[in-house]
Length: 159
Ligand code: FES
Image (cartoon, rainbow, N blue to C red; front, side, top):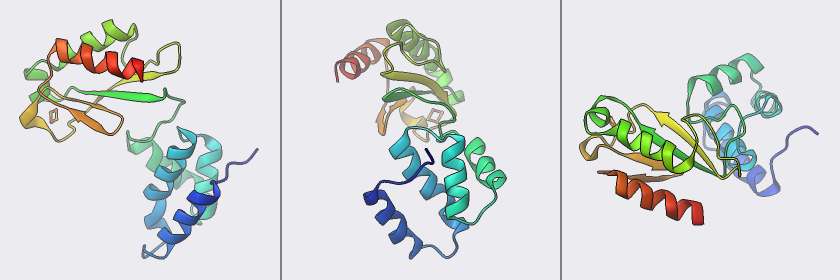
């Protein structure tokens, strides 16, 4: 079945159309709306976005593949991003990552077998002063230690 926005998201899209100078400028906001609904950006979603914004499918695919915030495959209900850029790396990012892998029983890039959590690495998430840090869904966790990682993941697994 072709992808379509829910009525509520369709209203949001229509409202966004009045605020952006061109349809092309809506590429990222519309992809975000779609991902919020679908969880990831499938071929059907890319075609939907291309059609609604009068863009080529290749243009939309270029945007999706450029930004790591867009999921190109199905992901877990929650996403854990461990920053591994230099400031975080110097302050223990790889210990944080290994603790996540140990606690979740998966490697970076994988999803737990119950479909709950996807573990990923990220380039600088703009919180270098509080390195090492990770992002869980839309929330930042900073000045991490392996103990705090365990606690954060325990709460996430229970949610
Ligand atoms: S290097 Fe990790 S937040 Fe900037």
